[in-house]
Image (cartoon, rainbow, N blue to C red; front, top):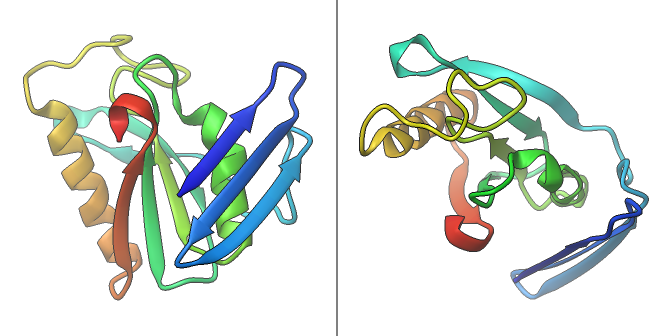
Amino acid sequence: MIDFAAFPEGKCFVRVEWNEKLISFKGDGYGFCCNRAKRHVYRQGRGGAELPYRHYEGNSDKVLVFLHVISEPSLYLRIFGEAVACAGLATVYLPDLRGYGTNPAKRGHIDYMGQLDDDLEDLIVHIRQAHPDARVILGGHSAAA
């Protein structure tokens, strides 16, 4: 179970219950216990598009791919990603889905049905190359869940 709350003044709270281990974090909107973020990293998508993601390296044999809501890019999840990685629960990847992020080719659009599925499949292949022995876990917020 994961509870995440962010407030307009930049304060946040993350509560993670992972395999009966409860961890809570309070942040100031800028981060937690470590700086594990590789801000925006880009990978080549099908058709040549640059697809951004945030990456937080955790000391774990698990990788969590966590998808954002339909109305926002992954930026709002950065504190959550850092908290999970800092706790050693998982390495975290927060992709910006095609059509989202700071500078998408076509904001909010895909070229064909199934393109987001293809992008996620390609990201998992990319992750498996970087973490060949890791267990990959998919998660998401709201409609992405």
